[in-house]
Amino acid sequence: MKVKFTFLLLLTAVAASAQDMAFARKMVDTLTSAHFWGRGYTNDGLAKATGFLVAQFKSYGLTPMNGKAFTQDFTYPVNTFPGKVEVAINVMQLVPGRDYIISPDSRGVKGGGKLEQRDSIHFVDAENSIVVELKDKLTWSVAPQAVDYTVIEVDKKAIRSIPLSIKADIENKLVSSFKTANICGVVKGTVKPDSMIVFSAHYDHLGGMGSKTFFPGANDNASGVTQLLTLAKYYASHPQPYTIAFILFSGEEAGLLGSKYFTEHPLVPLQNIRFLVNLDLEGTGVDGITVVNATVYPKEFGMLKQINDKYQYFVKVNSRGKAANSDHYLFTEKGVPAMYMYTLGGIKAYHDIYDISATLPLNEYEDLFRLLVKFTDGLMGKPVIQ
Ligand SMILES: [Zn+2]
Image (cartoon, rainbow, N blue to C red; front, side, top):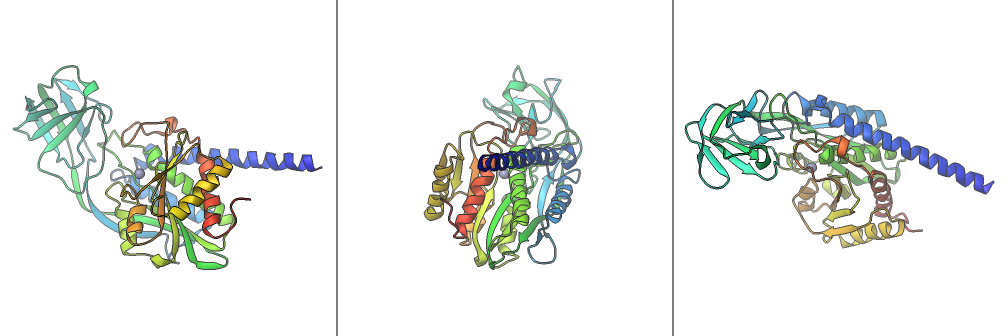
């Protein structure tokens, strides 16, 4: 009987896990699809993502953090590339995203001519104020303004000879007040509802560059959003003594703007937040995880290590100090205990068109979930090592 029962438990565990894996893969596929256009500034991509994720929160049974709405609206300026992005060098048409990127603070330009070499990597068309810069790797980002020239970063592997001439047709649009929103939901605590454990992840990415190219952002940060949604679903059906809160930030890639807005306009008193765990780049993990703020919160980091040592979720849990590299940072600066965990190993794609679902392993997705649930138990004073 006992053997049978254990076997049954094992079966349910496996079934539940296969289901979660299917959910995770589907969610990453969905968030990285062309429909959401890189969760950015053109084709309504970011707004579509907001609507979709609010609907997810609702369907799990979360309630709005402020009791009224899941969204916290805010605005910021951003330079966008909604239309044409075409570049030819030495009369050879280049492929956007693969062969080149437009520096995010560039202005649009239509024209071209001879390129003059300035140094080993810079070539200039002075008449049209175009700079060509040769790069070993293309890494895109988001800019709040447009300068009065155009920088085209070209992958060295894309051109065989020295750039002598350029032809460009690039359209930019500076949006002075781009509207977006953080998404904030909670599962009310059963004993101490004013004490909160917060999970955060940014759902924005870089968006699109022209009408043909978008940056899917699978690891950055469809992976973190997916892990957060999995936790939200779990806690919605397993309420805890403390309130478990979930914040999906926007504007992270534009300079931590969503978490900046939230910490300046908090929907709950910041001192109610007992701990915040930020999730960003969670799609790998074969080489372990790194914990930012580990040295700032040695007690909590010690507990996390202890849990991992006991259950062997990750091969390594690295300690790192303070870093302004994701949304936890502004909370730390306001005195809110926070850690940021990111997974290591596997893929090298980062802020480029290769950060796609098909090559994102998600191999430690379930172990990360288990680690986070146990860590949350520990933060609430439950025993975590039996
Ligand atoms: Zn990110």
